[in-house]
Image 1 (spheres, one colour):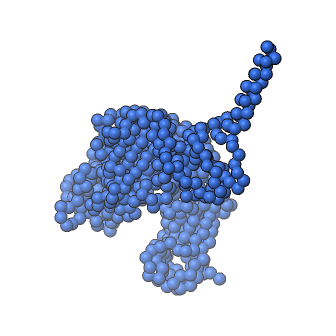
Image 2 (image 1 turned 180 degrees about the vertical axis):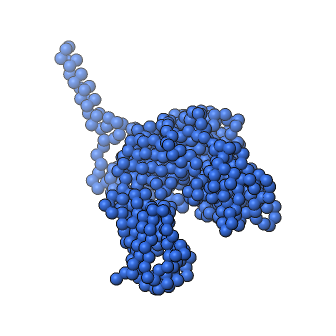
Image 3 (image 1 turned 90 degrees about the vertical axis):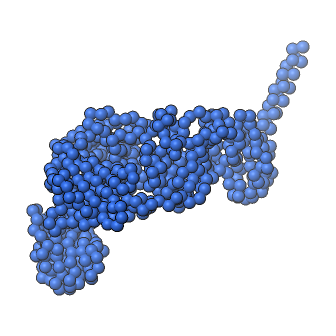
Length: 596
């Protein structure tokens, strides 16, 4: 009896082992693949649904019937188990391939979903980039409406314009639960800026958290499919047609010697606010004797063309407050602060008919606003961006902090009211200072400030981050920086408008002598001076001509007249200029001679 039981047990084991020959442990078929064929296996996770053997280099047909599963809806077939890339049924197949079924849970989602962002229209005027917790406070135009028949579908329809950006949040999770471009439908996913909506960069290094960015203006319906089971949440869009044409209206900004270092800073800090695009106001701290003017961009202008509005473009109001606050010095096209350091309110009012806008000014406080400054980012691997590193005040009034920052880590600066603790998460404080505030003359060559909104380290180093509280300009210096200055002639050649000369010299601050030469052929009547920029930047660091200035000397030669300031060519010829700079890119001397 014992021997018979053993035989039966052995037989059962053989049957079991025999089954393992024909059925793989992960649920896939192990039947042999005919020679010259490749196998395409349709999967649900690790479970095989079906397979087909085709000629190598051939194509596989999309199954006529979509698979089904209780409690889920089929979305599409994917090329990856992560369900991020749609399978290409038109592609030629050279190897054994798995195709994955994408299922989304049909369980209803009860969150309140909405969009935040920035637009040339007023779409995000009330919400901006700010996370919301009170659904009642979110304007209807920003709310995503829950579909009555699909509990996991939310939609919003709006006009979007080129370079508009947005993200999708819910009132419960906020920025810790943001849905960025990484959730875009696999068939619509794009990084091409000419497409309707594309991967636009943003506040997080993770592409899944990056911004949706508009590449073609239009009226769009944005559809969010939320998978309550967490398997396949995605965003789909439909372009319904063209967006409404925006009226010709302006955004106004201030710029000046001290308030922006004459940079065009098209940022919140320098921007006038308006409810009706007729009356624009700006409250900002100004320094005594600062020279300044205004610039503007047309709302809806995707090129962001900057228009200068100086003292000849505006009508200065004739009232006591304005007269006590600012003036237009004789022979100047700029305004000057004459009311002393303090907080000023500027108002630009558009005319009701033809004519120029009117400018009024008033000093409203004897002090400038005070702020605290913090650095936030992925420093030290902080992917949540919630840690704040407080910057300390320096003797010159700036604020700075020194941090070890690894390659590819990113950061911004948070500005808060003095003594007020900064917000956590990604919510706005007084200002979020990003790369738009970069002092391009003083940014480390190891910092990328040209892509997206974050400062990004391109190499691991110890960096000192400094912010000027007057103009909010940010400089970054690394211990291992390599600084190269470029000097050139800048002037009028052959009757053409003022421009940089094609001939330049580069001076590396690591060199023993900070000297370079420029040899250039000039025509009689040419007029010019010299300027320096930091390599990779267009922002002027210093300007020099024939004028004697403290710490600077110009040595002329026959054929060049520098007695009137700018240098004028009195005899055509080829000239050699030997330029010496200091470590900050400032001119020490310029020596001119006739080239041999």
